[in-house]
Image (tube, rainbow, N blue to C red; front, side, top):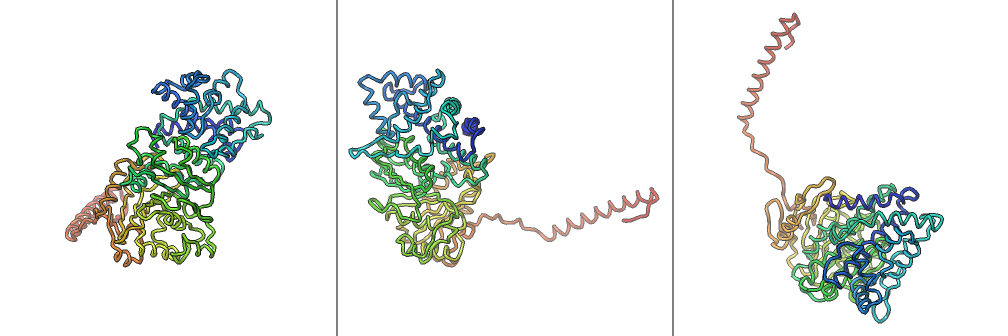
Length: 531
């Protein structure tokens, strides 16, 4: 984690100081995350307004607010709001921006109900001729009238005003496009630590997302109508990375996104599902290109309508998760071919099979997995054998340790295809490809370039990569442990026995000389000679 990010995270964490005094982390996290998002999207819309009107960046949010407020009543106001709706799926009214709330707090006119009205405006925003509401329920976890915030309106006003004032000075635009996702994962870890729970979210770091995305989009950068699916999308960071590689030639980023990419994703946790929708909004993904659903990916297959298969599938599912591997699941089209089901307490390969089922012929899938899936036996060994015999596994990339925010579990990226007719598998040991950080290691752009280059060259590299044939893997009993195929051990230096003998003789002589000197000292002191 760099110093700049650490400063942001520390500022976000301290912004909840007032909340921490009166409520637990399990409660105040919903309010803090909601306010952080609202500030980020509000500031982004204000910047967009100035860019549309004056084709420049605003000096600060105060200037942007004045320009937006001054536009109301003018002919161009409706045009600007329409463009905001196209880019973000909604348009925040001038009186409901985060900056407006901050100004109201300073002049003593802020009321909590204004925040509720702003949230409601976003949730009621409609798109298309059918009036689809893409953000219904977005702020379900933010109850502005909850007694957790205070017993009276005055107490709730006071508490939320204090948090808004602390957050106001933060400018997410200066921290990069993925600042909200990074901050979210950091805060989730802090919340979990404070409440004594494990952080169940494993946010995919930007570098890992970039690595997977470069692999699954290669050769498709100008593809029209590119479809991507993440069945365990979390905050959507892995899905959103594809925007950096598909349709890059377009003059208008949001127009390019509308033309080129359809985003499909599912998430089981409501709060995380809402954060993914917020993240999509912040990245200006048009609402009609978002096909997101809350649900249990393994229990009930989705999507089952058009389309059901995708150009790319990306995943970072929870590791060694429990799942309902009831016998009837063997009849499920996603799992039936593989003879056995993933173990009840290790759903890793169940997630992999689900994603692979939804991959188009010619498509590419990249999934983060714990190393255990590469060598564990029993049912997982049977599933792995079928995948290898079918030529489904294309590459295995071992990642460095300690690159994820909330887990030190060793991980790898497994790349799958439906057109690998040779059935060979490329193994890359990238465990040493990282820059060491104080608390966390990270993949640099140079590290990623090396991995990607090696992946597409698909050739042996001493102590780094090996292209294993099907017969070689079969002889290893379908064990995909990277160490079996990429030997990174260093040869031991040859030892000459004669040199060792001469060294021992020298040491013996030195010991004898030392003992003689000590015995002489003992005699002079009148002590019994002992050596």
